[in-house]
Image (cartoon, rainbow over all chains, first blue to last red):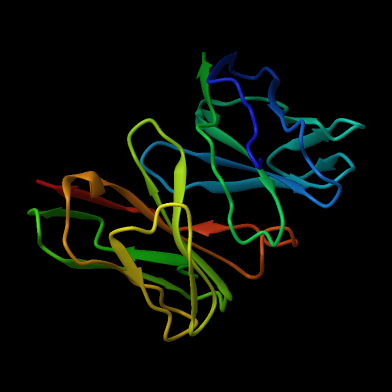
Length: 110
Length: 115
């Protein structure tokens, strides 16, 4: 089962950090974790991905648990523009079939 | 750099009509995908292609056809439109399979209504 589990929605205040969790308890050793986000009326946008080590880029940080059964996307300072649906995706097998769940709707308030 | 371009942006079809959703990318990506997204739902994979001349079914291929005659283009064909195909369609591309260091690049979608 290549599915991941995420909360349906989360809220944050602007300028505060946001931690978006994802459970992937059946992950195998070669599966990557990818995060995408989708702003209203747009296509999904790549955010970050990782395998075992924590990863940082200009958009976010990805913290992967030591047992790899869960991960957390970290937005260090949320802005109103970060309000979107965030998808955690587990890349399995040949990686040709990416499965998107319903994601987490992030709401950012002033 | 245009990235992934989809046309049209919007379309209304009558039941039984046919149409082709166009998708082109200018990044020389080998992999291309078609997804549909129903209201309030995640994306479901319709078809994908790993290179010119090669296509394969995704999760929900019924009612659709694709072709990949060039690296750049990956059109999606609806032969007999049905109300169940009302959705937003997204095309995406990637340099290689997802587990490599190559994220998906998405177009901005085609909103299709079948009445």
